[in-house]
Image 1 (tube, helix red, strand yellow):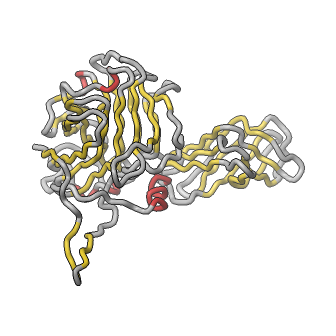
Image 2 (image 1 turned 90 degrees about the vertical axis):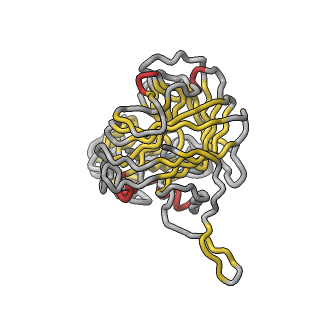
Image 3 (image 1 turned 120 degrees about the vertical axis):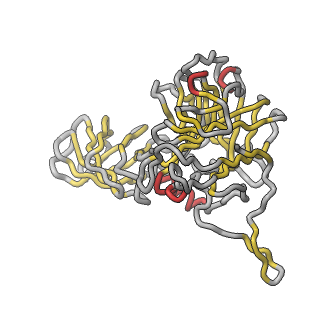
Length: 369
């Protein structure tokens, strides 16, 4: 049975000479970007979830939205946050959406199996975990979420209560380890998923507080944010840790948090005041060139490449050939390799530079789970 309540424990274990020393453990928090401080995808801009029609979308780093109807929600990085935090993830309902039996609106983080192997889920030695977070909503009542395995065949739905509207509330939920089911370990696949329910139909909800066989994202009877036009929900300080008690939030330096995010998504964005060189290229015809862009960290797997705005290639004779397409070509975990297309003007086998001169122009490399 899950336990719920406010977090009172401080991660303090010893004192020497009157100075209290924290128990510092590397990557105690399995959630990346739990303080919502990294937003490579959209900066602080609000984005409508599902405008492109796809079934999932990232609004800020590591936080993915799954949805069955679009666009019914918007999301963005916000500066509304409790004491000790600067950012949160804001979700706003765009319409009073009727939730069908098979509908789902949810935001989640998929945690890499390399980072969950020690939890031993699926074995007799499965370890308890504690999920803690701060939440704020214009609605009150019983909300829900779930922990799930990679195959979405095992789930632990949980409930949490928001008693006061538009007030930050700290939540702590302890979940026993799952001794059943199949859980991926020791690979770069999905170890487990932490899911928050924003409106889920009866097909994908069940009784909370126990492990269940099935693809469940929440608890029957929970508040459906998507059903109320203009309703808002904020979350920050999300932490998932091994053990039966929540500890203080595992703050990491911003550079460390950014690097952890860049394992899954790296966006190289232009500057407003000057030309930004992204990488090198070699023309293979009058209209195409191979590009290479080094990554700041090794990515989870060879990424797919995309771009936005105006991205150019140039050589010593031709300066501003805007690319019209890009496809991934032999990318690995350390270098992004792709083939770009321009209208014309390239010289066969001539070295090229890949560049932009706008903050709205970027190259993106995606290796999300």
